[in-house]
Amino acid sequence: MSTRLKTQLEPNDIIKRPKADYNWKVISLLGAGGFGTVNKVIQVNEAGIPINDKEYAMKTEMKTVKKQASRLKIERNVMALFTKCDPQYKDHFPELIDLGQTLDLKWIVMTLVGAPLEKVKQKQFSKSTALQCGLQTMKAIHDFHHMGFLHRDIKPGNFCIGAGAKQDLIYILDFGLARKYRLPNGQVRPPRLKTKMVGTPRYCPRASHRMEELSRKDDFESWYFMLLDFVDGAKGVPWKGKPREVTYALKRKIFEEPKWICCVSTIPPEFQVMADYLNSLSYASDVEFGIFRETITDYARTCNLTLKEPLDWTMEVKNLSMSNQIPQMSSRLPQSTQPMSSAPPSSTPTSMKRRSARIPTSRVVSCDDNRSIFSERNEETSLDRSRTGNSKR
Ligand SMILES: Nc1ncnc2c1ncn2[C@@H]1O[C@H](COP(=O)(O)OP(=O)(O)OP(=O)(O)O)[C@@H](O)[C@H]1O
Ligand SMILES: [Mg+2]
Figure 1 (cartoon, rainbow, N blue to C red):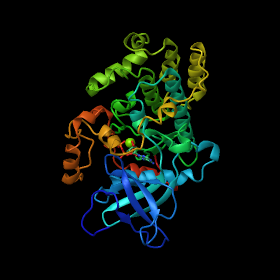
Figure 2: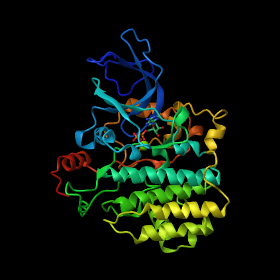
Figure 3: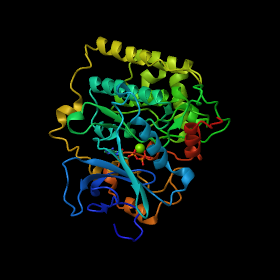
Figure 4: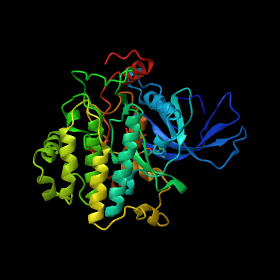
C-alpha cells in the first residue's frame, strides 16, 4: 500500500504481512458499515500470485476512530473466543483468520460468507424459508449467548447466508456492539442505571428505546421483530421507516394489544405465544428458546410444511447474482447521506461521505431506521474488564 492517507481499501491493494509467507490482496468491496468497509481478499505471494483458491473477507476500521469507540477491537476479541468454543455451538459463526494494521487502518480477516438476509429477502420469502430463517437465526443467537455475550444489534443485515456449499447455513455477523453479560463468577452482570440507545432503531428492543441495559431477552425481542419481517415479507414490520417515537409505540402495541399485529400484517395469531413469553421475562432471565422452536415447528405443521423444504435462494442461486459485490453496499446506504444524530463517527472522512453520495438512489432499499447506532461509550473497556475478571458491573 502507498503511504498516503488511505481511508478505505481498493481492488488490487496489497496488504503486507511482514512475518508471514503471504500477503493479502483486495479483490472487491462487499459492504460498508459505520466505521469502515468489508472487502473480499485472497492470499498472494511476494509476486502477487494467488497461493491458493480460497477467498476471505477483510473488515477494516480507520485508525482515527477513538479507542473507546472502536467496534473492530470488540469484534476481534469476541471472534478470537470462537476458536475456543465447543464445535456444536460454532456452526453459525465466521472464523477469525488473521488480523493486523496498515498505516491508516486496522483490519481483521474472516471466513467469507454470502449475501445478507436483508438483501436476500428483497424477494418475499416463502413461508418455509421465513420459518427456517427464524429457526437458524434463533439458534445463532442462542449459541452466541452461550459464549457469554449479548449481540445487541440483531437485524437481517447482520445475518448472511453461507458461501458456496454452505449456502444452507445462516451466519451471524457484526459483533462490534457485543457485551459480556456475566461476571467472572457466572452471575449476570448488574444493569447499569443509565445507558444510551444501542442497536438499530427498526429492530432494537423496547428496552433500548428506554435506554435501559439490555439482556438476553432483548436480543430475542429483536429476533422476534426480525421474524415478523421474514414472515410478512411484503410489508415487513409495521413501523418500517417511521420516526423513533412511533416505532417505540408500535413495538409496545405488539406486546400490549395482542390482536393488533394480526390485523395489520400477515403474522399468524399462533405467534402471540412468543410475544407473551418474551414479555414475561425480566433482565436476568434465562431464555428458553424451546418455546420459540416449538411455536414455529407447530405452526409449520399446521401449514403442512416439514421445514426441510429447499431454502428459496438455493433454488434461485443460478439466476440471482449473489456474488456479494458493490450492489450490496448500495443497498445498505441510507437514502439521505445526512447522518443520524448519534450514529456516524465524527471521524468519517469527507472522502467517504462523498463516495456514498455518488451511489445511485434507485438501488437504495433501506432508510435511516435500519442503521446501527454507536452511541454507547466504553464498550471496549467493559468487554476487556469482564474478560480479565475485573468487571464491576
Ligand atoms: N465475512 C463476510 N463475508 C462476506 N460479506 C461480509 C462479511 N462480513 C461483512 N460482510 C458484508 O459487509 C456488510 C457490513 O458488515 P458488518 O455488518 O459486519 O459491518 P458494520 O460496519 O458493522 O455495519 P453496520 O454498522 O451498518 O451494521 C454485511 O452486511 C455484509 O454484506
Ligand atoms: Mg452490520
